[in-house]
Length: 81
View (tube, rainbow, N blue to C red):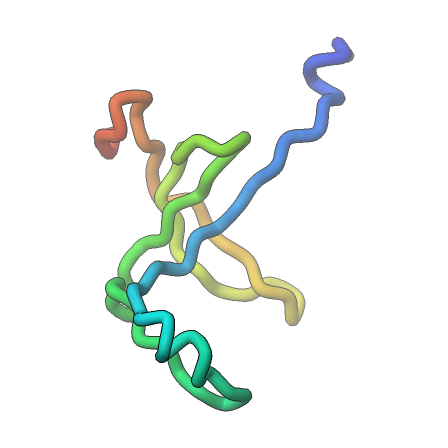
């Protein structure tokens, strides 16, 4: 196996995003809910090495959070069919 194949790369699953005011940020407390722009059931973006590479469906496996890859995202940012 080459060194490249044994290299570690960071993989992030982005659940969603939101915009709030500084005042709302300062008033956040345990139990508060932040509404995201995405809808329940929407695929989430998987970043690999800081670049969006896949769309995935969130879920769980063996009582741990997990994602299942649905389709790749091209280098132009388009969803490959």
